[in-house]
Image 1 (tube, rainbow, N blue to C red):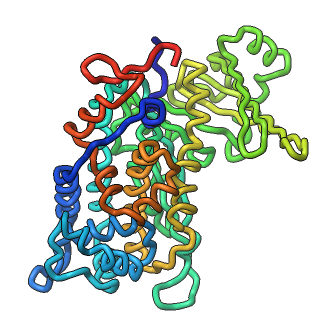
Image 2 (cartoon, rainbow, N blue to C red; image 1 turned 90 degrees about the horizontal axis):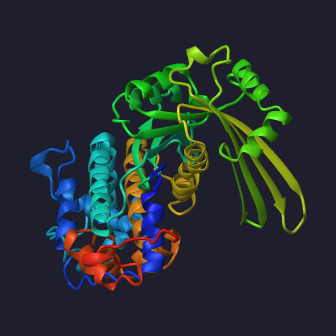
Image 3 (cartoon, rainbow, N blue to C red; image 1 turned 60 degrees about the horizontal axis):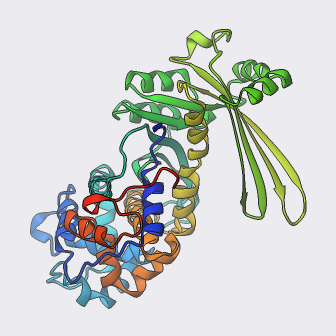
Length: 445
């Protein structure tokens, strides 16, 4: 069986939808909640200890539950926690009651985003590890990381003034395999995304990983970093590399396109319906790169790809065609096609949800550090909601409403990814249950 790009979240969704998983959690979810509380309490706290009324763990935990349930301002966080204080006290004492919105605001403006990011990512990676083990999901193949930036449109003003300033731009490294944003790094006012990307990638273990990026980051220095970190890459070509783009495009003449298409091994095409359109996506792949004049300047360059998307609007019959070109170190056409399509995960599965499901584009938090920390909480909530949504049989947006309507039941589901709960759930999986409660997917599934 061929192993290409890992699709752990996609596999889990298939299992949840078709396997009829039922989590019988009962009244206990103390273990995973304690783990989250512990990680939050380990975040660097710069407050004066003698003046602290609320432990950092319980303050961040209560804020997180409120954010997951739809609170997108500090006032709403306070109001939600006041309304749910009895339920929250089942997990953390809150001996001094619920913190005021000013307290939440002050603490979020003091927290080091890197420290909070470490805690949230650690929690998510632990959950994924437990889920993989419980459902016996295959780990072989390449992990897929997407690099892309996002601008917060509501961040372009100074605190407590109407004056405009440069909008906050965040570089994201999104783990498309596991549905987790691994890195959120604000790009400084005096720099840009390219050097920040190179610095971030230097600190990541990229073994058995393919990194995809847009044309802005298709830079020789960036690719050198990826190769040094033992990773694979795939990047798009556009007008910022005009000579190289023209050279790559010149290879895919009509005659060559026909030959590649007839050979089938290096040609992939499929048609699907989406958003009132019928879309046909086609990929032409070749390892013939030695003839390129710049071949030796691009580290580990081993393939070039032509991608074409044809769309037909069902209602209007209007047609459109897009053509893009890519360079890559990958040697397999299927892996390249999966990477190209999968790269849109950072837009569709992260950025879109942050803007639409979590209203980040309309966020009124003006303190930049506070905004970064709330955004990290949004990303933690989003990843957990993605895991809960197929179990609840609803969308991610709907599962967020469930969190607001029934805090106890949904909190248990979201925090229930521990060995005992998941292994018990396996007895309810049907018809895809394998031996000893483990789940296996048939060859033709």
